[in-house]
Amino acid sequence: MRFFVPTDLRIGENIVRQSAASFAELGKRCLILTGAHSAKACGALDDLREVLRKQQIDFFVYDRVRQNPTVSMCLEAGLVAAQMHASFIVGVGGGSVLDAAKAAAVFAANPQIDESMLYDYMWTRAPLPIVCIGTTAGTGSEVTPVSVLTDSDGRKRSIRDDRLYPALSLGDARYIACVPQPFLSSCAVDAAAHCIESFFAVTATPISHLFAARGAQMLAQLLGKLDSVDAAQRESLYLASIYGGYAISVTGTAFPHAMGYYLTETHHIPHGTACSVFLPAFLRHCAAHDPQSVEAFAAQTQCSIPAWIALLQRATPDCPVRLTASQIEALRPRYVHNKGLSRTPGTFTPDDAVQIMTDLFAS
Ligand SMILES: [Fe+2]
Image 1: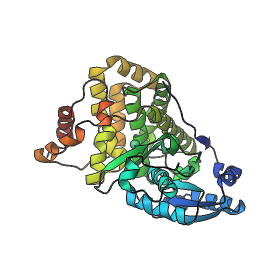
Image 2: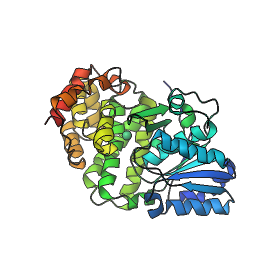
Image 3: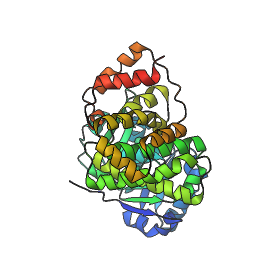
């Protein structure tokens, strides 16, 4: 059993301003990765700029990160960082931005590598230090060594390496107040997916169980109240997302994430929704193959499995995807030798995956 999460994680109101000295320790020049709007609207980017100016740290803002970031975009950002001789990278935003910051940190230190070398871990130099400032509650990327990117074939593929753990992650739940409600829900069910998949994963440990169960217990209290979230609930949502991050940093995810990627790649369903639509089937599968763990999960989260399914379905908008039988059958190769499927308890075969796709999306 191993538990290794070397990130300096700090959570609290005004935590970015309070951490000014820690930025100075990372160097005199940095590249900031962010999206087009949210980090600006929620005040996180202004907080960061003020801190960097006071610490006399030069910076450039690369604000071209979009949902489901591509490897080529991360390479572009990494080259910008290399050209400006940045000594660290800061990601300010949701999961897409934080994951992009990790990959950009690899490219900044290794500007000669291409996409295939990135995925083959042919990095001769360690990535630049990474700072994550999360502005959503869901991804957990603040405390994971994983970056999920869209490759040149349009497929979501991850890199996972201990050197991708952020050096510093700062969470201020006030930033979440600006997240529009449908996106807040999608992020919250992403966090739930992390906790639930991790709890039942065959790779789970006693330590990952603690984080997964506590995160899921908190989310069971919150998922039914996402229409109107107050400051205390935002803090709980953020903390639950971090617990989910710790859990999957140990276990990885299971079939809902593995199967959800297709819905995002091809049908542009937001990541959290794309995963959570599979969670009821995942819970039923676990109940059939690992009833003892299901009982323990219901007890530890103080929520029965039928109540969990009702909560998840209520928090997950309709997924307007309809597929023909041949379209579903064409997905079968994705399910062969798939890591996410192999972490699912019991026997979960490509036939099972095809059946679930048919049950959910057959036209
Ligand atoms: Fe996720």
